[in-house]
Length: 281
Image (cartoon, helix red, strand yellow):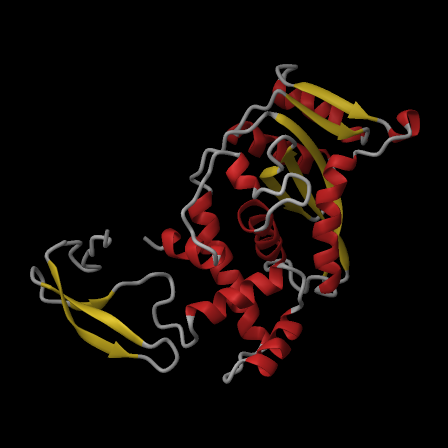
């Protein structure tokens, strides 16, 4: 069934088709007339006034977050597309649509098992070692919370736990034995959430369930040759998390984490394209 068209000016629904508007690379776009305020408009599906096609933009985003640097994506387009895009343009696409999709997906309430594995890892950014904090729900492999910081300390640990507490209260959270975890948990959860600490020096076992996520993140950051700006790094890292949660099937479960978390989205084969379109409605 065709989606109801609303006027962007008066929000009226008494709209009729009023011809096609040609674009340079995106084909002819349907134009509408609002009978209420007489405004003519093109429905924004997330790509309004973009010079490149939806397919090319989302292909670039998917390639970038799948492990190709922006320059490698640019070179791929030079070999396979009639019109090129610079590596700067590709990064702009990634940041723009990660922010748009994140605003939409932050409204979701995933159905999680509550078995959380949490840790922080160093991220190469502008010649520094910044930190990405991640919590993954083990049964679904869904990542419900992340936190980006310049330091690995009790202040940032509490800030990350505050984010977790605000969105979901897990059954338990397993961490390593870093000194700031024990006090942070006590202050934030008051013993209402079980805290499991794994001391690798005593058990001989690493917190492998979170390390598998970090290996994916680090592989991609290494392929980017590090991140270049503090303002941009959290956005691009969030793109990797979106790729994990909503785009790619997990290698163990063979299912996309959002599906296991009860978020079955009708986004089609090109999942980035589908996500951007429903986020723009």
